[in-house]
Image (cartoon, rainbow, N blue to C red; front, side, top):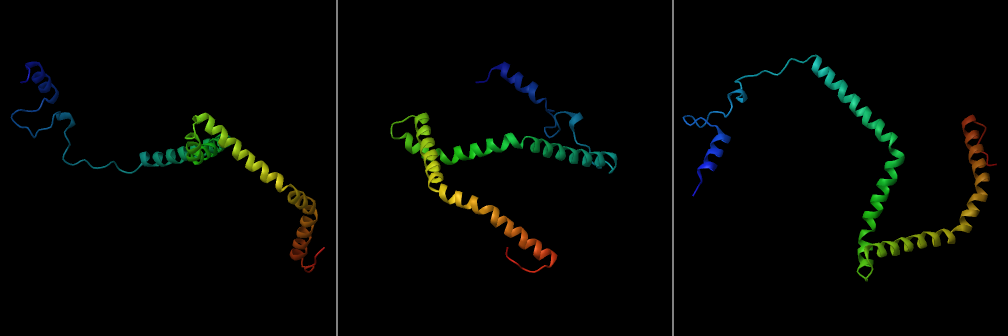
Length: 152
């Protein structure tokens, strides 16, 4: 059973013409039969210029924020990639913070151990780098200036 007040509220919301239900609710919002689009001119030129300006402003802002945004994006990607590992370690009875700490220590230990085991190879490469660079530069200069292909 409907109450009289709710019927009045519905009638005031719709305001439809009772004699013509297909009539629009508001005659001011009724569509005109044929509206032609505005002629191309000043509006389109300004729109293109403003679009180009907006794109340049966004690119400039992104370039200026690069020093901050790249580490944030990398951190989010690493956190997303390590989430399953943290979830598995967390099931061992540790909380999320404890599991994150265990995974962080494990990763740092693995990276540190790898760097420690490769230290001798890195030192060898660093010692041979000046001679190798000099050889590459001299060979490239000889190739460019047509002196011949000599190894120094």
